[in-house]
Amino acid sequence: MRRIVRKELTPATTAALERRQAEADSARASGMLDVNAAWRAARDSSEFRPVLLALQDMSGHARRCMYCLDSHGTDVEHFRPKSVYPESMFRWANLLLGCTECGRFKGNRFPVDEHGVPQLIDPTSVDPWEHLDFDPATGILTARFDPARGAPSPIGVATVEILRLDQREVLSRGHSRTFRRLCGVVERATASGRVDAVGLMHELLAADDHGLVDWCFSVRGRREEPFRTLYERHHDAWEACAQHLSLA
Image 1 (cartoon, one colour):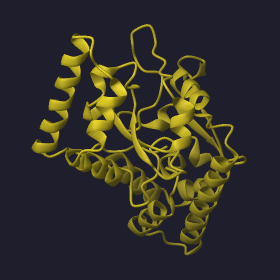
Image 2: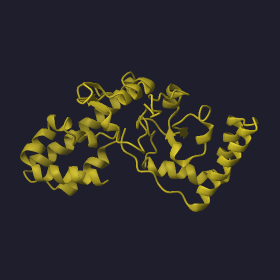
Image 3: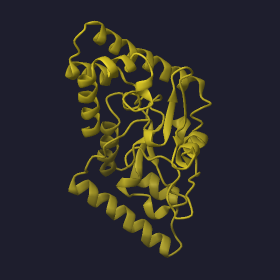
Image 4: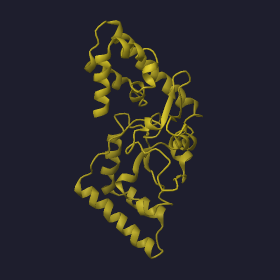
C-alpha cells in the first residue's frame, strides 16, 4: 500500500453525489431502498464518470488497486460496505479504486473497535506503513509491531487478514521485484560516490510499483542494505529524500 492523496471533485460532481445520497437516504427512511439497484443506476450514469476518473487519477498512471497495488483497479470500491452502511454509499470519502480479488476477499467485512473506529486501512486517510511492515526476504506484508502496545497493530492485523496480504504468492513476488528494483537504484546512486537526492527520489518513485519507498525510508527500512549505506554514508541525501516523502 501507499499513501494516496484524495482529490477534490468539481462542485457539479460533488452535488451529483450528494443528490444521489439524499435520494438513497429518503428511500431508506421509507423502507424502499434497494442498495444494489441504486448503486447500479448511479454507476452507469454519465454523471458518475468524473468520480471514476478522479479515483483512477489518484491511483497513478497504472490505475492499480488502492489496497494491494498489484492488480488493476477494476471498479469503485466502498471502504464502508454499501450494504452495511448505505448512509455512506455515495460519500466521496468512502470511495476507493479496488481490484476484483481484494473486493472478493473484503466483501462486507468491516471490523471496528469499541469506539467505532475502522480496523481496516483506508490509504487515503492514514499512512499504511503506520500499521504494516514489509519482509524483504519474502516480499510478504505483515502487521507492524507497535511498541506502545507491545503487540502488532490491530489495524494492521485486520487488514492483512481480511485482504490476505500475507497469503497471496503473486502479490509477494511483485513486492520482491519492486524491492529489488529500488535496491538497484540506490546501489547505482551510492556507487557514484556523490548522490543527487532529487534525481534519486525521482528514480525511486518511478521504480516503485507497490508503495515501498515510504517503507524503505522508515526506521525499519534503513536497517536494510543498500538503504543502510545511503543513510550512513550519504545522510544529507537520505534526509532530503525523507523530507520529500513527508511533504508528498
